[in-house]
Image (cartoon, rainbow, N blue to C red):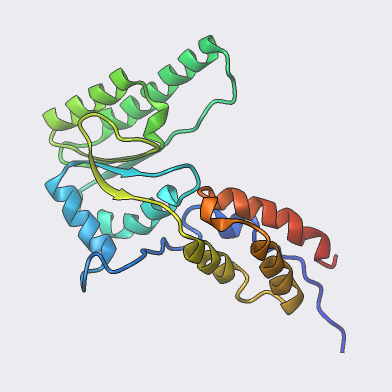
Length: 219
């Protein structure tokens, strides 16, 4: 019997991108209430809500996990994905801040009163642009849910993302759950030699594991 070729890397972008897997909530802070339902209720009470955490700690994945619940709570949702600039030149950074502000403002203008604007990467906005968004939202009774690397003025932190070694292992093992045994052994060996207690960016780890696994896949 021939062995079918292995062509799919479990750490490919399609498996690790935000939305490809559900956010895993650690602990039992919400009791019997589903965390997504609880966070949606928190956002009702704090209509300028923040999800704060370092890069690669699951903020975008959490947003994707919350979206089905949020859609049932608001008449309209305007999602905005902001990106960082690779340039270190101050003029390029200035233009980037203006572009990000214009992008959010355009979405907010078309959003109906009482709607929800979801901003992924609000740290890409200037302080003035963020405060302008908050002011407009309050005037139009809009709700804002934003992810950020840091706390932002006028926003209430609803959730902080972070990773423990146990969480990193669980998430990684879930990606290789259906992989062949050699791939599982290879990834397990790689994890055992790393200090996961200092890891914050899980997605960066998975990109590195992609390179570790890829040479072992048969064409």
